[in-house]
Image (tube, rainbow, N blue to C red; front, side, top):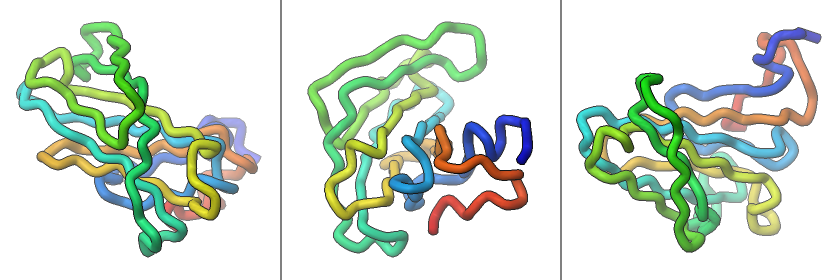
Length: 146
């Protein structure tokens, strides 16, 4: 088994805007990293499904906390809280160009195993499966969407 973080601690999907990501059984949780430059603001919507085809897709209203910053490493993360919802909205401010939200596998409804976060604007989304169920060499990691 690899001693590096990829395959042991996490498995990323860099182009994950609107892409179903396996959660239950594959990882304890997924961290979504979002970015939209230009202080434009964006709305991101979290959904869950029973399979990678989106069967039974429904909003997953568990976003009660997320963090934002400029995304360029010049500032610390700012914690944002809200009533649990399926959406998070970043403001049209440079300090909210980047956002991170974490979803735990235990928050999915019974029978649901996949999640996706979708930008309603031009924001990018990276999904990072974390706390993997089984450590593997990067070449032996399963695809995140199956």
